[in-house]
Image: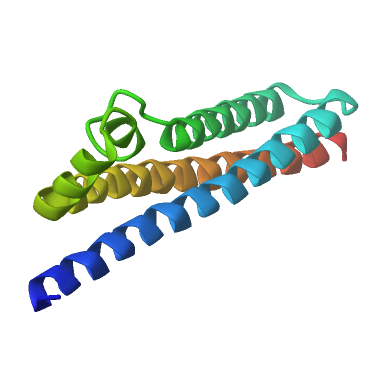
Amino acid sequence: MSTTTQNLTVAHAEVKAEIARTDTKTGLLLAFVGAVLAGAWTIARDLPLSFPAYGAGGLGMTLLIGAAGLLLRSVRPNLRGRHGFPLWATLTAEQITATLATDQAADIANLSRIALAKYTGLRRAIDLTMTGGALLILAALLALWGAA
């Protein structure tokens, strides 16, 4: 096996591992966002809230729902793509071997673009989650301040 082939194999495995790590992080963040949404809704429906608390809480919930949407979009399978599973499902065993022998660099580039898109979505979702959480904390403080 040549050095170039070995390097391509290592790069391919590295990109696939990055996609798997991103999907794992996305799943954990999605569970966290769901728990925060459920907890905030449970608490908010039983409290008498002032208008500012409703505004901050509503905006915070909206941002968390947006974050959940971004997270779901980043893990959504792309069955129309020209790489990965959809490509392999259309090829015979001989065609798969020939494609891997000649197009591994192209597959690495395609997978890298997928990983980058997933990381971008995850980063935006994290930003929305932090902002939404801060607004929910603000809403809770406004509710406590209004009740005092």
